[in-house]
Image (cartoon, rainbow, N blue to C red):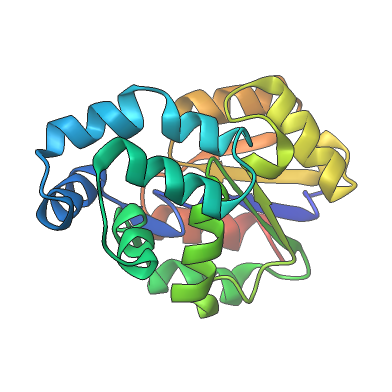
Length: 201
C-alpha cells in the first residue's frame, strides 16, 4: 500500500530558501553587518531555540531580537526581515495540488512561532491546501532528531509506513528513514513531480 500522507519540508521545498539574502536584507534595515547579525541571531543558537519552542510567543521573540540588535523599527518590518529568506515556489504548490491524489498533505518544518505567524500572513495561499501544519516549535524538537519525527507522526495520527516525506536535507531524510518513514531527498520540482506521478494515484 502506498503512503497515505504526503509530508513536505518548507524551506528548500515549498519555499525557496536563501539565508544570505535574509542577512543582507536585515543588515540594510538593522544597520548592522550581516556577519554580526548571523552571530547574534543564528550562530548563537537563538534561532534554533525559537524553532524548539523555547520562546512560545512571537512578542517574546521580537523583544529578544530588538535587545540583541538594537532595532527600533516596526514589528511588520522586523517580521518581514526575519522571514525574508523564504520565497514561495508557486510551481511546487500547484504541482502538489495536481498530483497529491487522495492523500493528506502535511508540512513539517524547523521553524518558530514568528515564522509561522508571518509566513501564513504574508503567503496564505501557499498553505491553504495543507491538512496539517507541523512547526517544530509546537513539537518541541527539530529535525533531524528522531523525537521530532515521532512527535510529527503522533500529531498526524499516522504509522511510519503511512508517510511519504520530502525534504531537501539528506540528514533529515536519513533520520526519517530511521524512524520508519518513506523519505525522498528533494532536488528539483521536476524530479518530485515524476516521483509523485509514479507513487500517488
